[in-house]
Length: 453
Image (cartoon, rainbow, N blue to C red):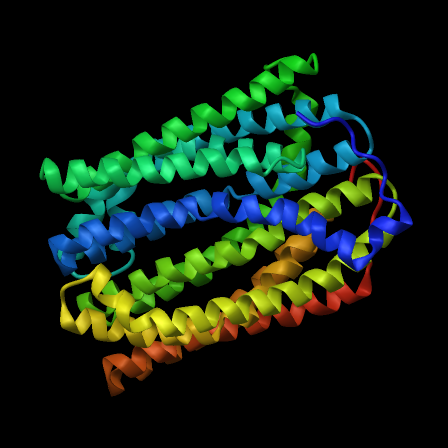
């Protein structure tokens, strides 16, 4: 665990100094962020060998699980900013205590979500309106997959604690080990033992539990080093919830849009749904790669504002927007170049592969826009501007709904047209987010200093 950093000096606000800070935090964060989509990509590559129905079912189950965990992302994002503020203010013990309480909150939410989700599996999957063969496969995956949710949420909160303490290397090591273990387990369980899609779910659950145990051990060791108890503190749990509930609303609004996209894809049939879901996993992978910059923003903005000096934050904002655009362009070009060779890795079905290439090309075009949006989102999260972010997300989702309806109607002109229209609707949603985030970032009304945002 770190000691309290020195307050940023005017020199620290220089562009090169800020760039070095960003690289120090963002590069390890990139590896850690890739673990969840790598889990899904590994599952998709392995389950895809079983046929279109299991692959489509995996996509539906993944949409449900990622919705639940996504709604709890405040356990990582909100915790990062809050812990970083306390660290910047020089109170390391308070920062660690706040983080420990956030982990207990994560465990409680995770257990409740797993029990509720297991009970409601059938209606949740049925709500997508997917073909019966895909629906059956999705239910099979979820019956097992729910039991990894508590561990996944604890891992999220633990990661947030460590990021707030400016440690992004430990989550990287744990995430890399978890991803490798997940692949190995799924190969053995799905292909070796013939457990089908249930084996993919079991392998992921085991990997998630191991990751949560490793991260929790690191935080517990640091807590003992700073004389902090391992039991939750009521005031810190309350503070975590107060900081987190606007981010919960924000994420809920975003998940409505993304679930709406999956529901729209279900109207394209089993082939279209399978292609969309693989492209959606790739989209998530690229989004989290860009989100490494947002993670660095959360940790640095919180620390700088906690120290009482907003000047480095202004420099950081300018530099990160540039990084987001350039990073998005690089990822977009890479995705476009790899679209054709990637498709056969996920399916042996020619029609699914054809539609997947179409989807990936549109995904590639959207990456610079995504980089810009994610960076601004991370900056405002780090500043604790959750209420504005909640309102902005709701507004963007309202814009997305009619676009998704139009995309479904466009599918009558052909499955490729429907696929392009659906991903273009997602692009319109991203533009709506940018239209709300960019003016807010320029206003600087969110630059509130002090240990408590």
